[in-house]
Image (cartoon, rainbow, N blue to C red; front, side, top):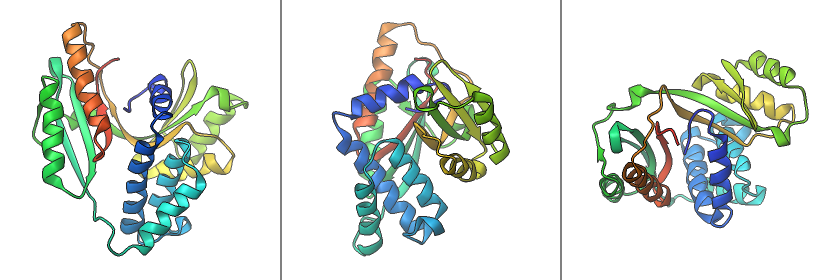
Length: 243
């Protein structure tokens, strides 16, 4: 799950995935394959999208040989699945907004599974654009304070000089925000400077958050989010529930 100032969730997600890294690695493997196909090159030096997915893979502790194996397979397999991007938007309990980004080779299967996840959580899938206006698309780079020993002001200036829009210091992390088109350049500048990134991706950040107080509503939205996260076709889920 992604969202502003949610580093604790990122750490929780990573810890949970330590027991099932195969699932997150499979999802990133699909992103690598799509990046190779759509970027037209298996060489990250000539494919900025592939560079960004590789950075995401590394932030999720995907081994280098696994990354290279996925890229090699994608570039050499003419019979590889032809994944397509499909985005679903809908509502959870009490008007919470949920965006689901998928990569699928079977849109009927994916549509059925996503609809089922919303229904089981007492929500519903809406029409394209019904909730996306409540989010801003931004590049988001998260740096764990435990992994950074430098000066915060220097880090901020480095990010802003590279083209970042905003920089914030949270309790346990630094967060860098960019326009989507500036994300690759900023991420590359930080990587070149040896900055270890806990997360680095273009994401959807809620403009406002919805607080749920009814235990039934909380259980319902958690049911939807858990079902979506367990679906192999689902790559990312964004929501404005204030957890």
